[in-house]
Length: 311
Image (tube, rainbow, N blue to C red; front, top):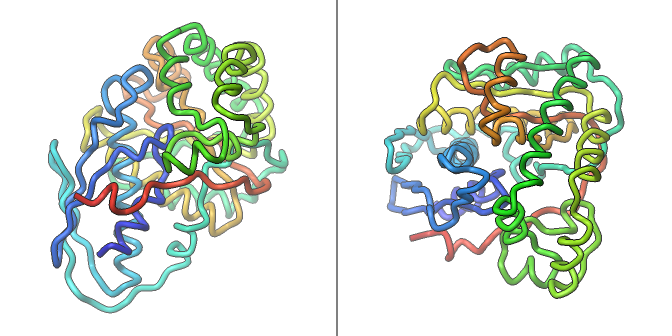
């Protein structure tokens, strides 16, 4: 059961806050949100927390199947209950992908993906209550860039956002190791520096134009953008979006394809509705924006020890 939890903790999550706790028994794991790890500025309604819990649970289901345990998942507003029954082992290449997957915040190779690969990815992310919109045309990607930079500008002009982001940045390896969480500089492809230097440098050089230019360059280097749309705007639907995204990300990893979030258009409320209209989804809420493509691997983000997340 601890190995299943270990796989769960390798799931993607906002700012690498790891906002989860696990309670284990012989045949059950209860997953609860850890609201002490909220990011209330960027995620005021805890959308990202529930998406993160969905990603973690999808890893649990896949890992359990490989260990000969069938998982039954029940969701309520307070927790997720995963009950296991013994059964035949169901190995999957997705199990190895759990340990290899990462949000690769770097330039990709700009090359298009074959239609059959795109179809496989779309199928991996589609669930009964979740749609995946794959945008591959250069004009569409340019449209995404407009919304990303518009929302990113709004965030960069918000002192509370900058303060919250800075709180979760780990400027050097020792800081990343000591906390086991957060956004490690090395994992973002940026130079490391001691926190007493990194903090002032962040204040000095983290600027709206340079960040907009960086995101535009990364999006133009991507083969496509995937937008995940859940059926409703509630925690249960956001949880399902997380499960769908993680299945998509693991399928991409098996295929040697990188993924990274560009969620600014869904994080800024004033941009979210126009973005939904541009996507043609009406009043539905776009839940995740993900760029995909082929590129080099970066160093991995760290995770806290199991003792810190098992209650």
